[in-house]
Image (tube, rainbow, N blue to C red):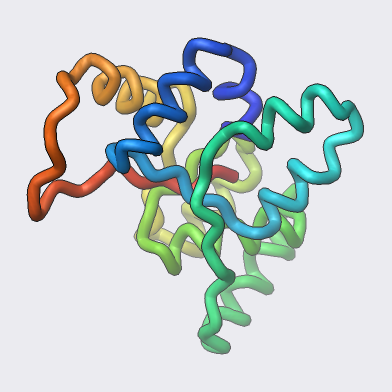
Length: 150
């Protein structure tokens, strides 16, 4: 979970907090991801994960997605929650950030237009680039970097 990677570094957590507060970065999370965080048994670790500022997005409401959801869920190694997270990313038109090999394979097969990002090679460098940029006043048309964690 991307939350773990962010929460593991206090400095990175502070950077993400500043960037999300300034609306230069949006980290989207499906309700299933929030439930995973809430179910973290270690209270201190759960609190660190909960400090990662995200925008919780609703699940897709399109009944036409039922077939895709079923195909994702029946893919090897893909849980119901992971299938819903991938479908939510597709509905929001944002990259799915995951290291889960099975989920990546299933998403590539059943959601071919969904961009698949990895933490270390895709999202982390974008966060670092945003951190290096001088803060500027938000201008009309500026769009923050958006992603969905899985």
